[in-house]
Length: 315
Image 1 (spheres, rainbow, N blue to C red):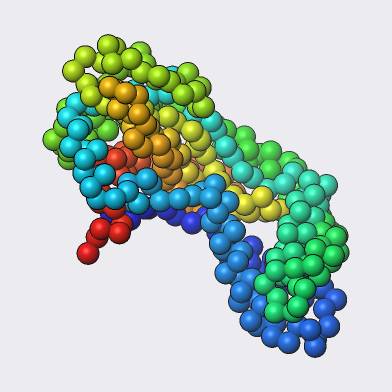
Image 2 (tube, rainbow, N blue to C red; image 1 turned 90 degrees about the vertical axis):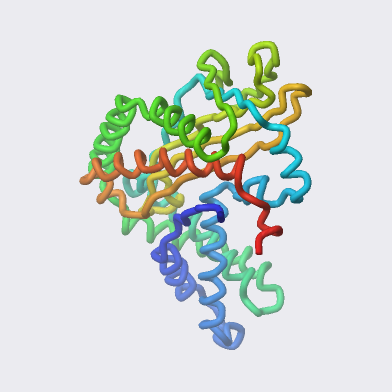
């Protein structure tokens, strides 16, 4: 089973950067292979976008663990105490810049980054230095371009209100209870191990590291801690980015006898990427995508933590 990461990168971002490259005053003798540079820039842009989406995401711990270590760890697990964060997931809505000045600011940052990226991937000797030197020019170009394509503040605020109303609808759906019920049923069915949920335990904040007392979990040998992190819409920090519905949770698997953390991972579910206008005018679609993340996250936590083999051991 491979990680089900969904990239949130759109080729409009690549085209924006390509447009900037054509505005730079680069001598055609030094830019002898613009097709090569643009192709390389596309790849670099996509890579940077993916890194941004997943916060320099890495494969879950179990995908790189040696077989013997993984099997030994799982052989010791027979009864699992499940706890969850005693707080609400942080809401995140990445929308376009509000007004011309905000759009100009984002355009400036994008322009500086794009110009440096062109220098990094160019075959010209000293290209990185050239890119850094010319980056203010790219920033200015991006600033004015951002102002030209900026969305009206009123339009963004209306979209934000519609999405906040959708978020309120999600809060009334008690997805946390659904998540817990689905997890407990699926974990017992797939793994054959015993699971018991302890409502009164768990971290009070997203970053709290709790030390669990074995006496609080009679009969359990392991604690599985599930921490809600963020949910909402994710998009690149550009003038008018498309965005994807997403939900992110953290998990820690802790051996009770000595408090050793066996697994400490973050798992994300991301939906299809669309413009903010689509999500704002079809807020029910946004709600549906977030709801779909519940069984996806449940299945991935169960499989990654208790079932899958390391990537290096698959045939």
